[in-house]
Amino acid sequence: MSNVQTISIGTFNTWGIPFSSHLARERYQALCQSIEHSSLDLLHLQEVWFYYLLDILRTRLPSYHLAYRRGLFGPEAGLVTLSRQPLQNIEFINFPPVGAPPEKRWWKRATQPLKRKGALLACLPQWSLATCNCHLIANKADDWSQASRYYRAHEYALERLADIVNSLAQQRRHILIMGDFNIPKQSELYQKFVQLSQATDLFEQDDSPTYHKEFWPNPQRLDYVFFQMEEKREQLHVRHKDFLFQEKVRLQNGKDHYLSDHIGLMAELEIDNI
Image (cartoon, rainbow, N blue to C red; front, side, top):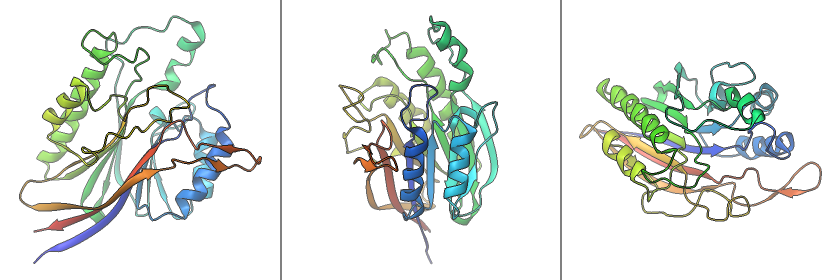
């Protein structure tokens, strides 16, 4: 006898990076209105760097539970997980920028603590799932080859992330891994993570970018929804998948603006317990 569970999931980088994002408060207010009226059961947010942004989420999303770890100025690594159902066993794991080039400008160095990267773990007992909200270091050289000065930092973080996924899998858990990986699908780093984690990319057949071309002249898919499940015990069916927040919206100041420099991902899943 099968027990079918349905869950609607998503991930979105909110462009809340310190001192360089635009109209953050207004964009967050519009974002919350869209989320609260959506069918999403679970949503991973990245770049919620400050507590005033977290307060907007907490105030304007009454039907969601918020999971995060407290940092100095805001949630650790800017990671917040939203769920219609309570979350348990919340844990943050830091990914130090091993091998990344040091920032040369003093204001970049001064804000480095605000730009920590890592993974936020939580459990969703209602769906028998573990969820991993992650954000990896940005590649400012737009070069993901082994010659890149960012390659080792990406490689280290992806190895750590794969270790986390495999550890959860050994505990007989089924894992959603979603977030801003900051690596393109065509890169060797992407292939390495898939091999190490044995995770399935739900958008594997789609090469559409998750970055608006207005903010990056050569946009690629940098955001991902991966699923790792206990083999032979369950079956995964993707009922529907789509992109989130692709169009400009009218903000309270009367201006039309994208909700972020990123585009979100969503999927509606059926998980069959065999």
